Image 1 (cartoon, protein in one colour):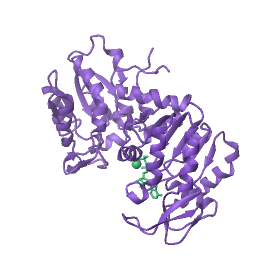
Image 2: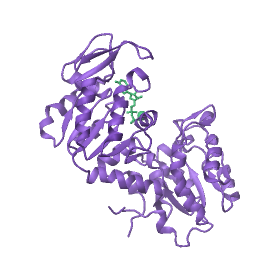
Image 3: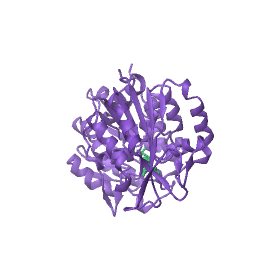
Image 4: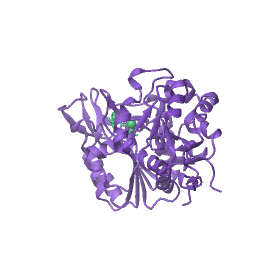
Length: 400
Ligand code: ADP
Ligand code: MG
């Protein structure tokens, strides 16, 4: 695989000294009471920032955080990121209180070699999500060069992702984008066979496109999580009070009617763990697929399904997993997700995991380092597997 875009390695040649380099990172991290509770995404940005510092550049970092809706939300400022970032990088981090205003310009002016700058939450401006060219230019005016290392946001056509590279040259990829691309492009383009896709999670609407794309490329598509109940409904099964998306029943039915036309085989659960309330300690009952009683809700795959999925995974050459198979946040409903996570960790297949909650699920099961690749992106990893590239990667300078 040759990466089709320029990377930071390509601009190394003496051209970084004292240069202001605008770096889009994904610092959309969980924060509780002003403290970052998981630094995975900060750690993931370190190699690129370190490379720039080592070559004498002045990195100016920018990210979104949460969904402030285009206006200043005091609870979503990026200040809590400063101290963990200083610990990771062992250098001073100067932070601005806006992204393109007086505070940002002053911070850039004050920035010295060996220090890192951080702009305020990009989504305080409506221009970020609207991909406003004026906002993109305001950001570009702060720097001489652009690096995108925000893998988890690169499926979005936002100003800092696809707008800024129109105004700055060179515009190149960072280390994280490069390494995520290598693996996920392989999943898209040339997976080891048999290639098994394992899909779960809450909403089918997020993932219908990927189900179809995977059915035409994978050998097996195993469906768990809440999305299984929309398929159940499409087959006129009883779903009780399970989470379903009635608007997508027709689409699910269409996929099932064409199931013989796809290269891959779709596998739905044989049995389901059900509960009357979604809380720790709730009584659970295992029922066959399509026979969920009123007042009961599907919360996990059942034991026969765990075995069925296990048998298929044990034959796999590659597995792509997105979405927990049950409500894994509650111990009584986590057995399906935990069991399959352990089967994946023990299997000889190259296992690639995408999705924020899927990554938390494998961390919860104590399996952080047991896989071929755990992506930092959710939607971005799905889109990479579906299309083989992302808008934020397409926007960068071609390798010539
Ligand atoms: P990811 O972040 O890995 O892409 P999603 O965000 O799509 O995954 O879905 C994760 C959520 O799906 C979890 O919070 C989990 O509780 C929920 N979920 C899984 N199975 C069910 C189910 N049977 N009913 C309701 N929610 C479910
Ligand atoms: Mg999620």
